[in-house]
Length: 162
Image (cartoon, rainbow, N blue to C red; front, side):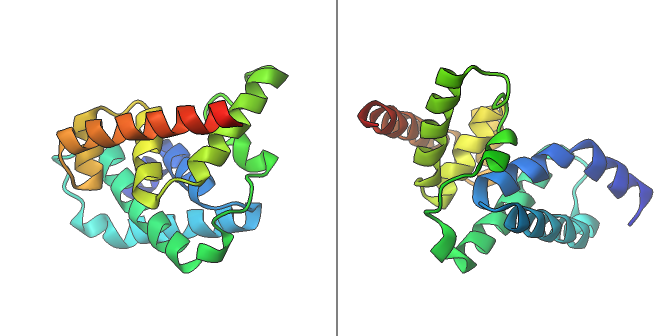
């Protein structure tokens, strides 16, 4: 690995861990998926266009790898998130018991989303703009806005019904 790639990967390691925690359930699966993502990033590195932000490119590669991995591992899709997976979600350890329970409900509802919707929600939770999310997912800003509204409505219903 080149020093530039290693430094960028280390600086943005959280992206790999969050994507892996969103798509894989067990610690072993998360580790395997994170390794697959890192390998694919390395293989795609020669084609990286430096005029684009590294984080956006990294999300695109990581999410594509995760979605493909999940399709191969579809039978694991409905397993509940364990506590270790929840700790990788931003703020999971900074809340009281009631808020943690609500977070668990949201995470379970999130796990039931389709692959692309889950990717979009992850990008939204990471603070990506509609434009950035559209670029990562290869869609339009309007599509991102529409899907996010539908996702939010769906999650509100799921959490309210729980």
